[in-house]
Length: 314
Image (cartoon, rainbow, N blue to C red; front, side, top):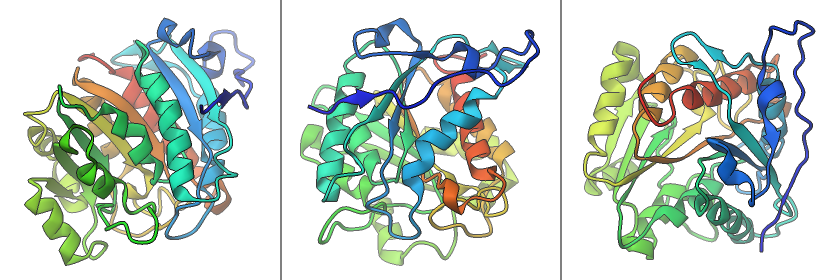
């Protein structure tokens, strides 16, 4: 059975007693206490399946460090008050095969999904998206995925899964008949092969390009959510390479033409207000490749924005 170990000490960074920060309110949690929180963090320090540049194994610690210093207050939604940290999945970095890492992460994710709380996974590379979401597939209910990403990540699994295969794995899963709905928001032109774009279309999936987000981010997320009309549960994934390279240089494959953090944050708030959302993740933050911590700062704020409206309109 996978275990979780605490690797980070939460503490606010401000000397002003009026500055309530995430570091002041996040509490260490265990599986037994997870249901005492509205949401819990789960770190996944792993980048063994990255197609491009490695470094995402350091993502969970970098995201926590930035989050600890953020104020908890959102002007419209008010403060975030109930957040636990379950720690990191152990032994991920020692996994010899991607399948082994996915199995470890899947076991940990399943334990969290079975509790009356909301999981927020801190990546880690995109290969573990499969492990984080597959437990939500079932015969009794249908699952849709909102994937904020520059790429579709529906590559065929050949020798082994990669950071480019998680949604193909979910579609092909025998659990519950596989993924029921899929939408990629922020997809970049000239980053995806024709065959994979055709696969998504054949599966009834939706592709919302970065250009469409730039024209109207509210309309873009509405289009993606409309593709989820018939599902019972939603899983939301943010690959930080969805952001333009100027905003997120610390990712496996930074490229120009992406969306802005402000567009991402607004869409995440709208997605989080859907009461069907059953899990959330931020992946592909690679601190060693970053510049001035920009990518980790964007990723931590993505988490904060999502949590600010989780479970209803605020």
